[in-house]
Length: 197
Image 1 (cartoon, rainbow, N blue to C red):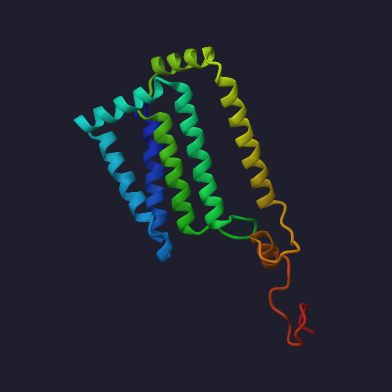
Image 2: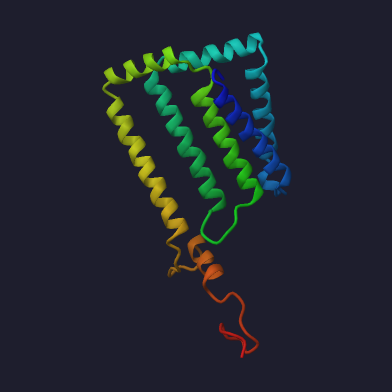
């Protein structure tokens, strides 16, 4: 990382992800957590400790940023996949607290996003990328894709947080959390879903 704020944010995200992972009690299907953290700590060591491997990594990031359209598309696809995997696997919704493993995953994805955006970047490279993007015909397409992604995830967040309702199917996550939040989960002593008489 070239700038101190990026380095500090980057390290804090990794420390917070590691702390959240230490509080998690992953199920057997969540064995991905430890390899992600090992990868994160190894990559952090490579970036922070001067070595030939660090030089190669920074050169690779510089080559990737030499084609800013491809770089933008990779970051956009990464964000879509990371958020999509979280939404599909854990179904975050109103009334349900996030589990520590979810915090670890979200913090790890933010850590990797900060790495993709800030690793080895400097002002001349940003200016060069801006000039290339301003002359590219695909910039409008990527602006449109980015706008659609932001609108989709904003709508998804709104519906998950503020619009929770039952449905006619009875097996969706939205229906389950509606009953958890607003329905009568436990019947009274007479067997009815009502207050105890």
